[in-house]
Every structure is written in C-alpha cells, then in structure tokens.
Image: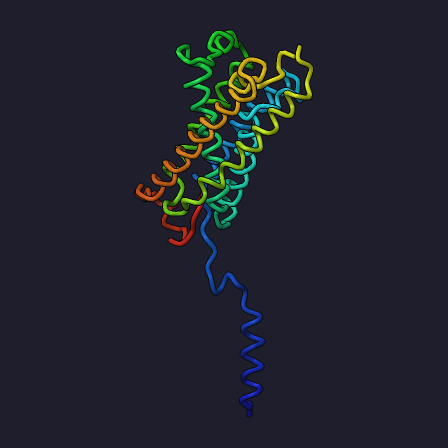
Amino acid sequence: MLTPRSVGSVGSAGSSAIPASAVTPPAERRPFAAAFRGLIALSAATGLVIECVHGNVLVVLSFFTIWSNILVAVVFGWSAARAWNRRPPLPALWTGGVLLCVSVVGLVFHLVLDNEASEFNQAAEIARLTGAKAVANQLLHTVTPIGAVLDFLLLTLPGALRRRHAAQWLAAPAVYFAFALIRGALISPDAPTRYTYPFLDVTVHGYAGVLTNAVVLGAAFYALGLAIIGLDRVRPAVRLSENRISPQRARGLK
C-alpha cells in the first residue's frame, strides 16, 4: 500500500519529469514575420557591406547611418530567428529604439541632406552616386527605414512601449554626438571627412552652433520617440493568421 509520503514523493518525481512544453505549449513558428525581418536585416547588411567594400572602413563606421543599420541587421536578424524558432519577442525597449534610430536616419536624409531647400543639403553630392554606392545609399536610407516602419505597423503587437522609453532612447544619439566631436577633434583639420555631417562641423558652426544643432535634433528625436509611443498605444493589432498564435501578453517584435 502506498503511504501518503510515498504518494507525495511519486507526485514530486512525476512533476519534475514533465517537460515544460507539456505544461505551456510552445508558440508556433511565424514564417512570414521571420522572412520579412530577415529581408530587412539583409537589406541593412547588404548596404553595410557595399559601403565597407567601396570606402574606407574607419570612415564608413563613423556615420550614425551605419551605426543604426548595424543595429537593424543585428536586432531584426535576431528577431527573425526567434520568430522562426518559436521564441518569445525581444524587449520592446530594444526594438522600439532601433525603429526610432533608423527612422531618424531616413527622415534626416530625405528632409535635410537630400533636400535642396535645407541649409545642410548635400543633394548635388548624393545625385552623383552611381552603381553599387547608389544601391547602398537607397538600402541604408530608404529601404531599411521603410521596412522597419512596416514591421512595426503590421507585425508587432501594440501596447508594449512606455513613455520612459523616449528618454532612454536618447542615449544612442548622445553617445554618437560625443563620438563625432571627439573624432573631429582628433582628426587633421585638412581631412575631408573630419566631421561626418554638416550640422556637426565645428569649423563652420563653432561648438556653440553645433551644440544648438544637437539640441534641436535631440528634441526632434525625443518628439519622434513620443509619437511612436503614442501610435503604439492607439493603433489596432493587425489580425493576420500568424498573429493569433502569440500570447496576448507578448510584447515587442512578435
């Protein structure tokens, strides 16, 4: 006859032997999300490789565009793998921050650098790009940002972002701003790529002018972050078939 103690021991042993998957069924594979995010990561990675092959790697790596696309390649590639392997989403703080950075890249490029009406425009120089360099330019500044926005709107569950994230995301441009100024101070004044962006050129605007430009851009960065968070709170969830398989509490990139 089994004693209560032996019953308890059997129950404990049995429960410890039950695999977690039998208690909580694993999420199903999300092939469309995995494929789309894989393409976004590939777009960013292709642009990065082209830029490095056709340019000075140290100079290429000094641009915020490159920093942002490296983040896209890593985060979206990782998210694609997790979607394929039935893994939970990455933290919304990470995915939202990458979305913000690459969105700023696209907006600054098209509204400031490639806009003849802008004080800092480089439209003539951009128009001279041909071949692989032109392809990389479009991938890094247009294709990847648009892909990231579409992923946010169509494949990411709403409600994950918090107001505090907008302030936390400012760490990325702040680190880059410090890097750009330190780099510019260490490089020869005759170097044509001393300052990566015209609005950060201390020789033209002085430190006070560059700081003013940085504050304006930082405010725009913060405002866009708040806009993304606000949109995340009001947008409806897109009911694709593969969206229904994720737990309602799942957040970030599905």
